[in-house]
Length: 165
Image (cartoon, rainbow, N blue to C red; front, side, top):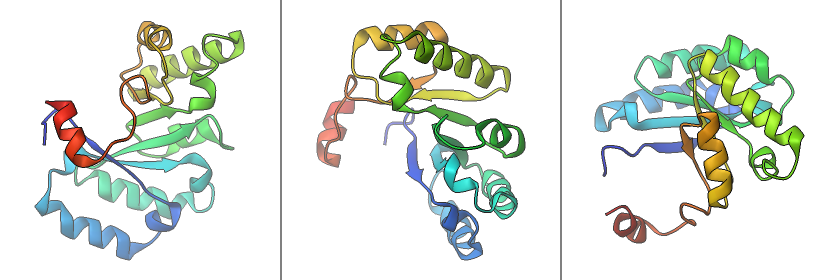
């Protein structure tokens, strides 16, 4: 696998509060490069048991696994999670990114979120990038990475390898 790539995996709150899940991940770490793993957690899921989730996030992060708040801005307590939990990345939800060029409010929200995340030392990923104009706007705000059909549509592994080469 290309050394510049990471693998993002959606993880549920049920996973994060389950000690068996954490033990399983810890057992797998010697078999892979944990620094290339990003566990994505939706902020609404964290609302359920943030204390236990926080303990397990810290333990898994100590192994080198990175954590991202997925769908940032769509949940109930976004800012409290950035303050309390050990996240390294914020993923701005596509509902804001898709309106970036057409509504001033979305533009302000995206730009402010990027600025806040950067001030907190977090990486920023924008979801749902569909065109070059949106990519250019996000780049001007300082977004670190993007996801969306502008780069590539979902594809089978064998096509992905060829695409990367």
